[in-house]
Image: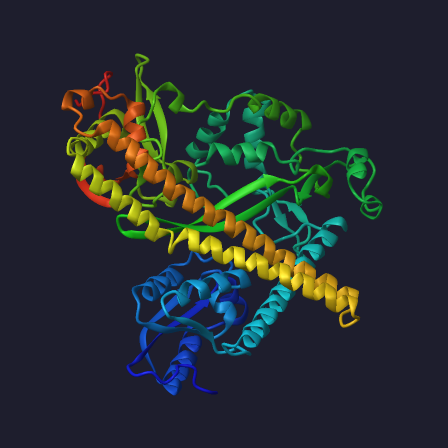
Length: 569
């Protein structure tokens, strides 16, 4: 293999990057060690000095939000790196557009991206060859995903359950894992839920406390039952008996032919909701924290596919009464009872999730307000060790006491805000305006390729099927580039807004008197916290780590008990 590192004097530093996603590791044994060994051998052969070996275990290549890739980008930005080496191009990113933006970003620091399976060279023709092959690989992955989706759709239309997750509580998979059977051990638990809420008219809370009192575990092994999970059970058609005629009208004629007249069936829906998972990162006092952001939305009803399953044995009137009973009884948000001035700034010091706002009432009717870990609250004890409720009035007072010193020192406040904006800029990795320009060039490149493909088809050098495939690939690339362009513009606009907010904040609060500061209301304090990037990390031992403008400014303990006035007791 010819050398790629030129002949200039001085050491050539390389960063070795390897990645494997969880499913790849399980499916094909794709080894991080094997990748690193191959990269070491290549670096030695080409005369590179290894600056650092970076690994991304269990990370998807469909996102750039990865701990290892962030480390690589930091190393390149620091300067001195000649090349980032990976075994395959899809180890760096599975999306060709992301490969493009990384090449542009690294080139600004005099660094190249090189994969051992590169087919071309640094010439325009070589880059075109690799780009086309990247698009073909993406097209093949898309075709595989589409075949998988269509296969699942076909099975659902044939009346088969897709057994790729836990079965609904009260059921188990049959031997072929394409149908459900009633589980006589767990169905009585579900029946009790419908009895309490439907037959007896009790609230979700009554069912929750009954299950927890009896020590019944959720299907995920938790002792604490969430309101949301019980609500989900009540709304699931798999438990609601449907008559033969009702079920027949929902399924295909082939499936209907297998139904027995006079029997009742539950309905398991395929494609009722669409779920997406995206990895995101944020800065914390301990560094960057990575988490999965999940979103779900309901598909149009015409896309739903009904699959008949055995009757749960729960009376239909119980199911209908339970749904009617909880239709309008969602618990009101306690945040509507007072303004929480740390809203948007309070985080769990253990798991990093936002803190929820909650309230309790004593026997005299006095209310007390708290911040609690949202994950611990919704998912149960095993999800997070932070089980404490943090007094809202006392925590807010302590935070304000620590922050107000900054507001009486204009120079210090200005430095803090400028540091916060600079940290935000660094977090965005590069110049958003320059990144937007790169994505605009990518869009222009896609437009040029579209015209070229159409010209080749007009000359008979490409079939219509080939043209359609190429145009489809280009359209995917355009969508990605357009989305990233909008995101880059949004980040640039965010920086501009931060600058404007900083100036407005300084105009409002410079040289303000202590008495005037003490007169600020919760909403005004919250506005300052938002602009200044305040984060209050609340820990299980009742300590609070305070971060303002990206820097730690204080650690303190806050007691828990409140008097009815919300003061220290």
